[in-house]
Length: 198
Image (cartoon, rainbow, N blue to C red; front, side):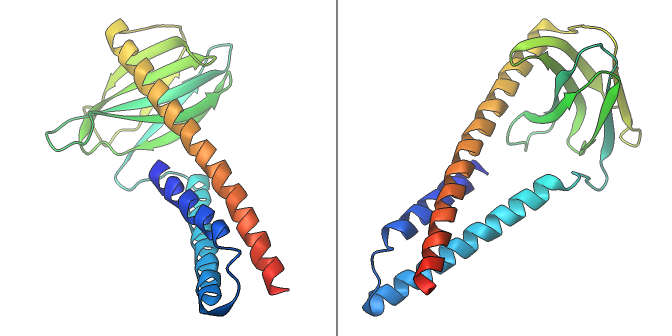
């Protein structure tokens, strides 16, 4: 998704640069390009925000529920370990969310090419306070994980999970920066288009 927002930024920046072209045939093409760029940007953001707002239910998926029984809110991450030779990367990392004490969160896992997942919980940004490894022998059963103790089942695997979570957070920050820049450029382009039509 990062590359989509990068391309969108280039498209909108170029649209701003050609704004001074107003007369003649070149001006008409510039106006058509600016209108198309704004339309594409609005469509991309609409799709992105709608898909992020909807429940991530997947057909033939396993329901995963994590319950925080500890007295402090924790930031939970889910790492699915992929199996098979045709996987792009061995791990798929997902942010489950920040869960308060005695609350839970539900997610959906597509376990077609996997039989194992890990749960990592952080207090703060880098302080790993919980790590557990879970096998999924029956893919028709929902998975419920209750967090009652501060444990680390595997130091080696938890170090891998720390790296994966750090990579996910870095990618999320990069995407957030490009989204902010794209929204600013979209606002400027939209304002100039409206001003031009008056």
